[in-house]
Image (cartoon, rainbow, N blue to C red; front, side, top):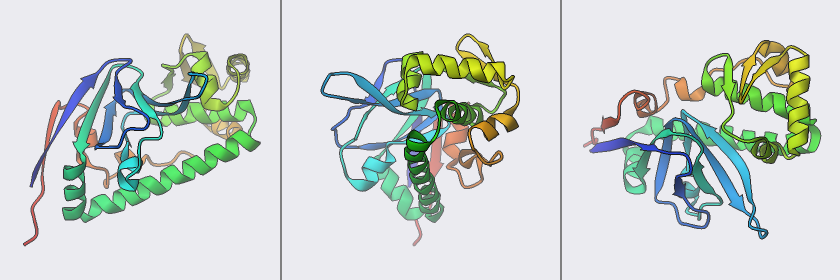
Length: 233
């Protein structure tokens, strides 16, 4: 079987799927940033999660055969691959490593969801903010963290107010853990920042490991990716 993954370019504000629709694809975020948002009865959007490339999203609803629980909106110019459901499940069937990879991926997401629930209940705003910065740092692969979100959007992510986010950033800067440069942060002391956020030492990134689907990495520089899988006879 030959599967073509075309990396399409999306602009800020583009919507990939809507809350309540049935899933038809799995999405591979090669570059950029995508947010999951949910509307409440007051017609206000709440950010549930932000994905930073490289990452995978949309797979939970597809595997569970359930409607999307939130809408996916592009936050900045991004490079994204969409693999249709039929090709995804065929690839799953012929490539055993893919199922193992997604098992680890889903287990990690479940752990992150449990951690997010605990953070909202037990962590201070400063601890949550430190954890978010470290998470973005791991995605960026450098010392700089860039936020596409406004203070209000960051507050939605952390379950607090925009004023509390501003105070938290100022406190981290006062402690010489970060320096604030507009919407960018320079991390000055990652070890201490992890300590403030009650985080373990730096981990290996799942999406850069040997088990990762090669297209996620290749698509960061190539617009079209071809994967060829051999059927077992």
